[in-house]
Amino acid sequence: MEPNTKKLVIRNIGLLLSGKMEQPILDADCLIAIDGKITEWGYEKDLDIEGATTLIDANSVTLAPGLIDSHIHPVIGDYTPRQQQLHWIDSTLHGGVTTLISAGEVHMPGRPKDVVGLKAMAIAAQRWYENFRPSGVKVLAGAPIIEEGMVEQDFKDLADAGVKLLGEVGLGTVKDGKTAKQMVTWARKYGIQSTIHTGGPSIPGSGLIDADMVLETGTDVIGHINGGHTALPDDQIICLCESCKMGLEIVHNGNERAALLTLNTARELKQLDRVILGTDGPAGSGVQPLGIMRMVSMLSALGDVPAEIAFCFANGNTARQRGLDVGLIEKGMAADFVLMDKAQNSPGATILESVQLGNLPGVGMTIIDGIVTSQRSRNTPPAEKLPQIETTT
Image (cartoon, rainbow, N blue to C red; front, side, top):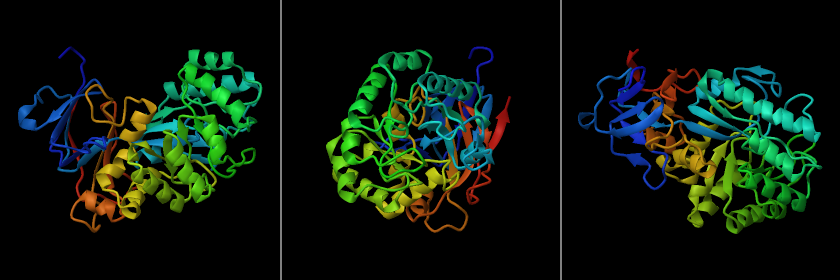
């Protein structure tokens, strides 16, 4: 290896989850990453583990790609004025989430709604989370809320400055499908992904977005299809699932019955790969550090989905839907992982059985870009077994 190369070796893995629905479990007990990128996995006896700068004994626990929250509303740093709470992102890391995706920095006090101001804030938000990772967590932010008066050049300016996301369509002054579609088309032209608010109003200034507007607007993701908080009628949810190929985002802060309806409809369509998960927090209902893990457990248990598939909703599906370099066990992908085990005294013979019975696993460690970012979780129930750092230089 070159001088200063960082080599991570994780050995004695009990179960390796891939994030890929087509092959959710990999046949391996060891994984290697070089300089924060996955290079290989397999059986320890067949791999070169010499020269590890960080060597971790997984102690037979499960390793999965770090979980991704597809729908958050950050403001600045690790603080949210929505709940007057510090360190909510650090708490989320302790729930196994290593990447957060903004659906708009809408809780910023005095959020500018003029075109110059909203562009400035979006660029600033993208920059401050690019330059500062709370507890190591990747926060993909800078998601402007579209407002009346924006023109194509504004979207080019945003893209040129590094903005890659739109905030929830419908939270600003653009309320009609025709105008929203034009702006979403401009955004897509310059490589900016879009999400639309779905369902009843969530905060002052938002409003009802029904299936007709969602379909007319044509965003990349149907934000909180199960409502944030109020869901659309069943027939509209089914219509959305059947009438487009957009990502079906199910959130913790939505309607659980509508979440299961979305899941079952996607399964009937043989399109479970469209299902992705978010929390839609911080919000009026608070911060949910274990929100993504709870969604995995709930959808597995009540939706009768194998736990290894439900975990894909929380990492690989989102990675593929959004074109990220995280969330999958693939060569060249970021070495972002969560190591977890069956919670102490939980029913089920294995972690997968326990999760499918509706229980949360215990998180023992998180790793981001090949660097250990947390060890035993302060938020999940205690795991039966914990990974250990054997060597770090």
